[in-house]
Image 1 (tube, rainbow, N blue to C red):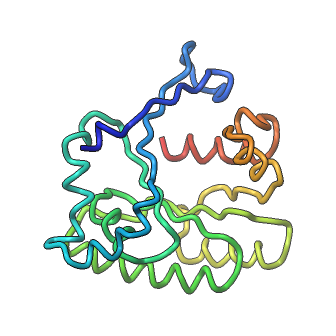
Image 2: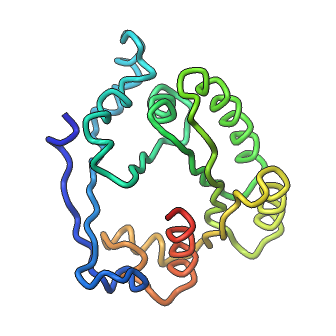
Amino acid sequence: SANDVIYEVEIANSAAPRFNNDSGYVLHVLPAHLELALAEERLFFEIDRERILAKKLAPIVSSYDFIIIDCPPSLGGLTKNALCAAGGVWIPVSPGSFQIVGLNLLQSTIERIRQINPSLNIDGVIPVMMENTSVSKDTISELSQWFGNLVTTPIPKRVSMQESVTAGMDIFVYHPRGDAAANSWELVLYIE
């Protein structure tokens, strides 16, 4: 069961200074495993394969305010399972026309998944890895035309983001005063 592999990560109040909680907060994580590489193949033979994740999460859903399912950048069985289990979708989009084409494919997949999961909605589009280039500006402009106010504050491409991952820290601890942390925090507040 999901409860057997969930572990807690305590996040100090200093990591998220705008929370008014003196003791910080706790994040529950259900990590991926290398066996997921074989999951696509195994899902092919399962009955009602699109709803396996929703069934596995059902016993714990009421224990959480929200659950974030991080998906691979593909529209395979794992992503379809996540879409069938989800109430909303947050779509990160990096600069470039190829990502816009992928977004079109995702939208058509979401429309098909709504036959199984009618409550599925696009809750937000997150421009990520943005730089001060015409490609980034054009991407944000095109996203704004398609999705209007669902487009969040862009998350800039910064070395500190990559370094924080390597250091095993979130950006709020690693480089709390940088614009990547500030924009990421705006996203957290938007999602809340």
